[in-house]
Amino acid sequence: MSTDYKKSWKSCLDIIRGELPPKTFKTWFEPIVPIKLEGSVLTIQVGSNYVYEYLEEHFIDLLCNALRLVIGRDAKLEYSVVVEKKLRKSETTTLSSASTAKAAPNILDKGLKDPFNIAPEHLQIDSRLNSLYTMDSFVEGTCNRLARSAGGAIALNPGGTAFNPLLLYGGSGLGKTHLAQAIGLEVKKNFPTKTVIYVSAHIFQTQFTDSRLKNEVNDFLHFYQSMDVLILDDIHDLAGKTATQNTFFHIFNHLQHSGKQLILTCDKAPAELLGIEDRLLTRFKWGLSAELKVPDFDTRKEIMLSKARKDGMEFTPEVIDYICRHVHNNVRELEGTMISLLAQSTFNKRDMSIDLVKEVLGKTLPLQHKEITVGQIQSVVCDYFKLEPDDFHAKTRKREIVQARYLAMYFCKNYTKSSLASIGSQIGNKDHATVLYACKVVEDLKDTDKKFKVHIEELQKRLYAY
Image 1 (cartoon, rainbow, N blue to C red):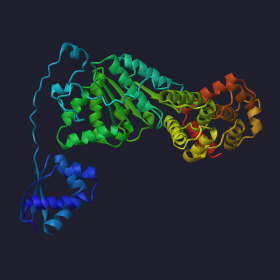
Image 2: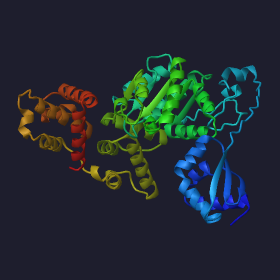
Image 3: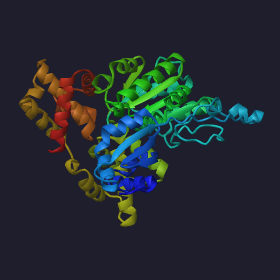
Image 4: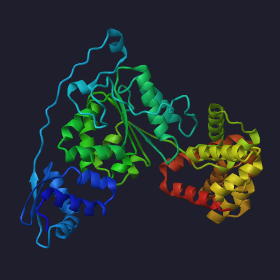
């Protein structure tokens, strides 16, 4: 049995450290200070009641086992909760008139603590924006035009448009983070004195937890309430985090009522988000919810050409067309394919040919290695809806046949190289205008009809495996 409280606690920590992830250990156990050891009772000091309650709820068994191993079978643990009141040091920074004109207000001079741990001598907080995510590098198409247009309006008048909050939603890799940060960069360019911050919901949650541990929730709250533009990425990560949602609710209300701009991103439409409080979901709907959809064939080509120009890559038109026909899940996948091709071509000294593209896609996208034809798409759609191929050419307005025909046209436009006129002539002997109308109907129904959206997803799976 040890009688030295510091050595005893250090021995306990050595045992606990081996049982926990490094980050968890650092957050919850490193700040603990041993106070005394009287007999078999060890007293430790923690920074708040919250820490005490958290340790008791999540780590009590681990603590007891460690104490018994170090001190003995009769070991007991007592807590001393001491909240340290930190004195703030007021500092004043004098700027020349030229610097003052361009520098953003130093909110740290207002006595607010920066959860990103920016040193107080900095004249301006770091907006944490990626300088590569610009509006110029964001390729606009029918899949994202509404979101892009709203972002442009916000950049010219942050907090002063009807798009507050702006909620960007859609699947992974479709450009939500890119567009959100691009808006922030445009705001900073147009309004140098405005304070813009970008933060992921995961980091936001971590900062909030740390602020609770240190009894600095008010500092955390006031910091974010001082922003002119708050960009919160992946808000679906706040699902089930009741305390964090409650704090964000107050931040949201303050910024909204103060005419400040909020930009949010998530992977689903507000109505489909689970684990988010209704009062937050209601506020998300105050502004504009804009979906970023999977880019169509033409937009994918433009994305490829834009990235190729920017990075100095050279692809033949045939290679570009082939890639865009076979890689259509998201932008990230498209860019990853381009990088893989460039690496294979450069390091293995091989020509950027269709054969090389097929080889790379065969490894990265095994379900998409075949070219899909209009006839194959018609066959898959007919089989799914239990129709005969001749039904597509029948002069009928039956809902199920018209719907199937529109879906076939939609997939042919996005998954084949065929012209609109060619697609129309093969599906019901229609013209190109009918094909365009069919694609628009499918896009609209996908957003409003859940059953129809399921049809699209199931057909996509069948086409990938064709």
